Image 1 (spheres, rainbow, N blue to C red):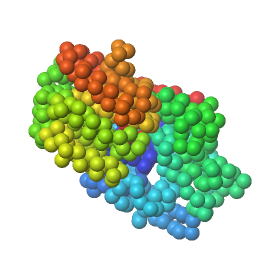
Image 2 (cartoon, rainbow, N blue to C red):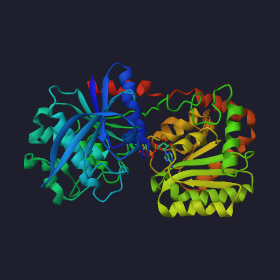
Image 3 (cartoon, protein in one colour):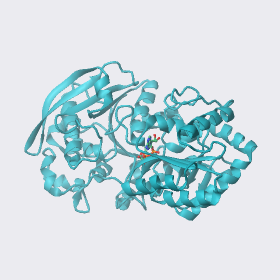
Image 4 (cartoon, helix red, strand yellow):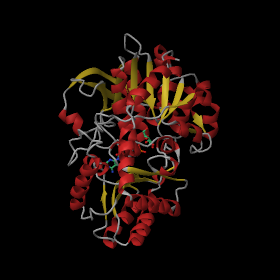
Length: 468
Ligand code: ADP
Ligand code: GLC
């Protein structure tokens, strides 16, 4: 099958969170199954763009309302990522260093989606499926089935994967003229609660919907930032498919970014060496259990509670735990997490920012990883942690619920029910007690590391879904 993934992120070209990891891996694994999965994404001003070789496959121009824009589409020449990669360059809109966060993001992603469809509508053949990821590409299913210019694509099946329904990309009806001409009576498909809502439009128009874990599919019928009733209504065409991980990128036995590689046999000594190395960089005591949080510092992740959680834990442990945070996001949370360094020198440290290499090193050295998420559609951090021998401490929600079993139930993680300072504090206490039982920790690590979360299975599940 020829599958066209359209996304705002794709690792290693541009990654903000797990969406990038998924789109950088799923197509590769689909190709291993004998398919032709390709990725189309905006051409940002990134290192990847500067350091790789491309050929131009399309030169044209598009229209966004009353404005024209020029489009150039590049194909990465070597296919080294395991899939064909197409980068859509729109002068003045995509060519910026960041993926998101500009005041004209609506215009940027709309122009991108229009350019992708203008290009595809000129192909001599039709792909078997167009697979859209999140709201940045959410108007594609609507435009494919309704816009006059894209009639040729109207019978191509479209799939929407919801990585996170919290973000929907809404904009006002005053921008309706941005969308290429369609029969006006169909405009209701774009609407949700009085705005044009790209995620809602995709939920209505895509042929199939997937969420990135089965539990998240259940949860969004009562918690989806206002889209609950729509999602409940469209449940019939929805499936929850648990994300995998790219076992080649996240392989502790081969990972070049680790101080010492980790195998099931060497896990204790390798993790100890990695912990010593990272603790010397961050001035932490390597004899203590090392707790970490890695992620976006936003409410969904429960990050606002972290300063209090860590303050209490460090205070109570009285020098017997070490904590290392890697994250960026809400400036207030960033500030409070940075302040803790002064209160607990030698026991707490934080790297405020994004650092891919450091994230690998922390997964490879920490004893426990916290994920007190309020919302977690899948979560990849806990899957990386499992593979790197780091015991996850997670709230029972979404994908966390689907992938982590509590040690009290014969499992390998520590689970709690609420995103609250008390609940997480109690979980940290359980982790501290567990750490004292070295034999049990060793067994748990070995069990965790053997769990197979690779994309092999899920890649096939998507193929089955496309064929329905
Ligand atoms: P989300 O996509 O909601 O942020 P996921 O758990 O699916 O959450 O994926 C997060 C991904 O981003 C993981 O690969 C994680 O290691 C990475 N990540 C998050 N924050 C940082 C950071 N500050 N530095 C490096 N990697 C990060
Ligand atoms: C989103 C979700 C996260 C998920 C990721 C990849 O960013 O917040 O839970 O793992 O997408 O699907």
